[in-house]
Length: 73
Ligand SMILES: [Zn+2]
Ligand SMILES: [Zn+2]
Image (cartoon, rainbow, N blue to C red; front, top):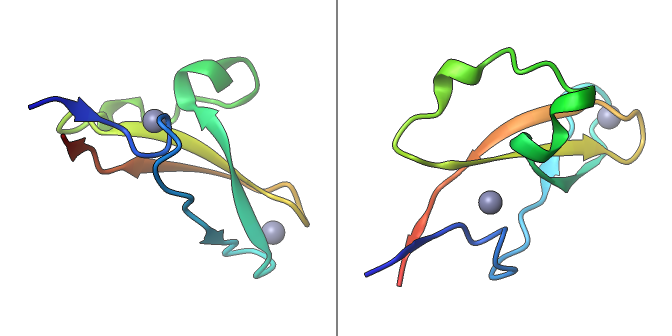
């Protein structure tokens, strides 16, 4: 069995509602690739090897760091 991130592998499309304006947040890629512009404030939350992605609101540009549950294939 192999452990994969459904977002990195385009297996699912997760939509998140912005807590600030209620708009739609889009996946902007893995947190590791977003380091320059996003403070790794919860770096200690790399729990269970979940892939962490940055989501950005397409209305107010709010950023959110989300842990994505891995799939086993
Ligand atoms: Zn991922
Ligand atoms: Zn927003």
